[in-house]
Length: 315
Image (cartoon, rainbow, N blue to C red; front, side, top):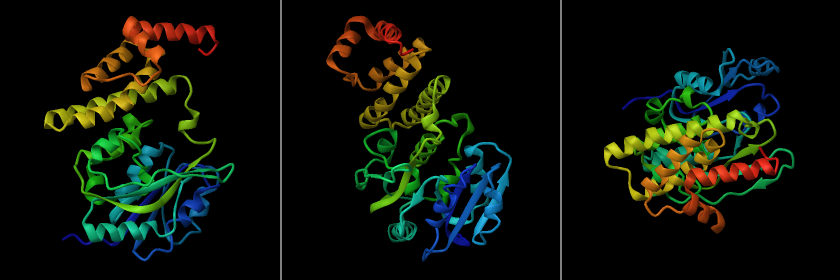
């Protein structure tokens, strides 16, 4: 059995987030198990590196600004823990989460231990509770889009899962989803922990809140591409069950809509894919729009919706 210097390594990528980084780091301290806090400074210019030099319990790594995907991979290469966690510098964990999930993994042998993640509004300091996470009986179906799938910050991963699922720069706008799906492809054993594991902080500076124009289309196109890749693997293995196919359509359909604004043929192909995956698929729109799909087809309906947006001045 391999011996690891620490029980849990926590990788925190940081780029000009000194206003919240101390909170994230503090939420990883004061544990019973042996924890290694790794902060990868992705070329910050706000004093982050200088602050890190004053923290003796942090393993600080500095790199030129290459983006979060590269920073996480850099941190993983230096991690020495048996289990790994990932925490964005603007999010934070609840007290006791690290010990609770580590001990749960030790007791059950689970490769992924997960808990509920609540929303936190930075401006108002209000918490938006999410549903408690039950014991999932199909981790892949949940990660594909079946209901609430928690958030990676509320999860602990066995090292062997992460070593074969690096963050992928080609899916930089959707790399979290790609990571979780590649973990799910390994059919990990899982266990749930009760209560809130941490907080996903919402604020104006978040990457996904800044998506406009081309970035919306690019993010949707990346989502469709990664689903093509993952579902192809599942199909080749004979593991693309009706349940998993149905879960996938819940993500593919809205991604197709986002692409339809500029790439109608690609969007139409994705919409047709939903019907292939789920023969009884019903578009999740109102009755009037569903009627339009039946009468005009996907392309005709999207052209009509585009005209409506233009007339209303919505682009």
